Image (tube, rainbow, N blue to C red; front, side, top):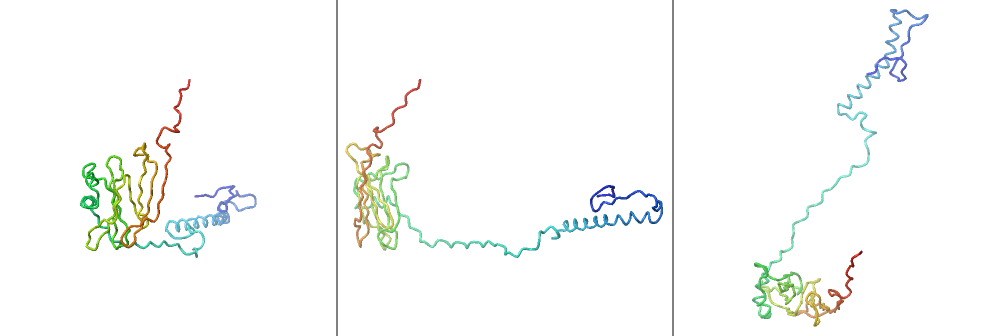
Length: 244
């Protein structure tokens, strides 16, 4: 709180001069009224400051708000609508191992070699999708070897109206694998030369089949030759030499 000091420049500070010649002596009424009148601006300033602090502490808008209320609309975030529950019919899972073992169209060698690799895990891959244009998904089964996952056979099963599955395609070629690609059956077979290892074939054939009324017809065939230097010592980097 500021007092009445001498020599200040602020508007609420009042300078009181000592009485000089010709002025009222101390104790005269005029001498007492002059300081009181001069102190009125300071008191008014303190009252204004008190009102300002009261407005701020009372939670009012007062001078704490900067300018008038804005006229721009307040942005509102609309919550996204809840996604409806899934309406797709769940695909019934099929015991592919039992299906293959009980299929007379599957070769006896494949059925005999279809055994668990570890525990009850069989080397069988299954895919569900539309291939034959029916109302129920078709099933593609790939039977592999346990050691190096080389394909032994690819089979396509179509679901009948009574819920059973019938074999409509079979390919028992070494290193064969079938997939579903946008409604087509794509079968890939590895091509091996006399000196090729299982991990490094010489090439591959990629054959595309499309369902036509009651069977699969071949619609495209692509053959790829692989670089024979891959996986061999040919073109290998030289061994590093010791630096003296």
